[in-house]
Image (cartoon, rainbow, N blue to C red; front, side):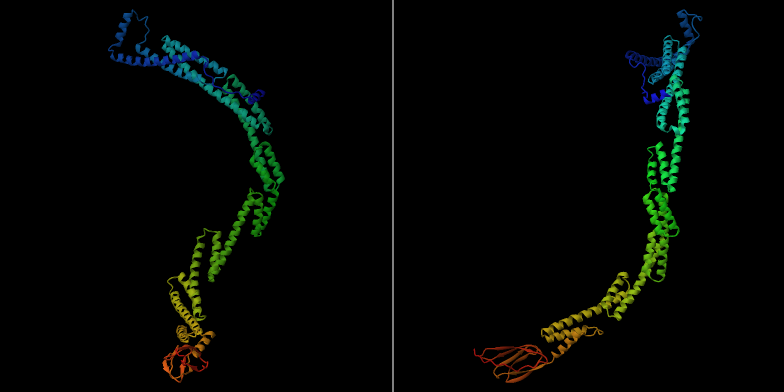
Length: 570
């Protein structure tokens, strides 16, 4: 075994051995010989064609052969009993075997024969081949044929030996590589390890001696023994891995670390073992959290159980119990909430609380999005809600009109109804009705505002006209505000004529311009009834400058006499 370990440490390099690679002259002779053989082959083919032609043309080949014998002076005792056709056939068969031998010989010369047995066999094949060539030269074609036939058998045997030698050598090399990998763990099955080395040593010896079949048998035995060691290693790794996983599941972190550490002593690169050691560090906490979650789950405290499972999963994301606990409790919470939402929705729908029903149907559907019946329930509830909303809105709008006189509010509701149901006649009629009333109120308020402005400007006639228009626009139910009543009373007062005394000299033409106009007239004293308002009094007399007065007449206010006399000459 020491020689194998030494050889394994310094592995022998394989190289391809060519036949006489440094003898250029010999190589050239070989190539020339090959070319000659090709030429011989071509000549033989031509000869065959000619021979066939001659045979075809001969009418009596036996008589011609006898005549040829007589001319040469030969007798039957000196000429062998061989016909021309037989000689040609022997030559052809020998040529074919020669060609096959030559081709096979070229192939085996390229094979790696770095072994004494193979070298000896190759030399023997070469020698037999040369003997065959010599027989060909001496026209001993039958013997040459048999010789080349034997050469071809030897070539095939040689090829098989080379393949066996290479396969056996590869088996030995693989054994050395594999034994290096398993050597650190040989204590797990020392007997198999020793047996493997013994068998490999025998196989190496047979390989050296050239007994390749025996070598292969022993190396196969060594490989099997080595596999037994590998199986022991695999079993050791598997057992410790299973033990470590069991301890993690039981919350015994220290024991789990010990098991995986044993595994790493055999397989230091085992990534799973390294990962499991990290898991084992939190195994105790994870185990306790999972147990806590299970207790809370059994008592249907699902939210608390979910928290416990989630904490365990955060500590160990490889924990199947924690992960399954999270999934299982979430499903239970979903089922519980689904049942709750569905019950609330169904009760609300029966009580015509459609908004509440729709909301809870949607919550239930969010939990199980594939439940088509929930989507149908939402559609149905929305349809019922829409019809209920229409009825409610119509009733509310009527109430705003008839009870509260809230035309704006009613109009907003009617517009909502039109948006919901464009063909709803109640909404259309309500829009027309409320619009008409709202426009009347707007006109009333506008004319009332104008009347107040005109009254402030002392344009009482215009103010009275605006007031009358406001009263024509005012809905019957609408009562006057205190401010409107005061404006009404003020306009009534300012619509009554006020007596004004005019004094003149009977020579001055007096004219009155204003709400109550008076044509120019001469007077001594005259009382005129003038409606309240602003007036311009004009006095004219020939040869005298005109005079003008502004006069404000107010209802309920006594007017002082007004003297109108032109007394300044031009």
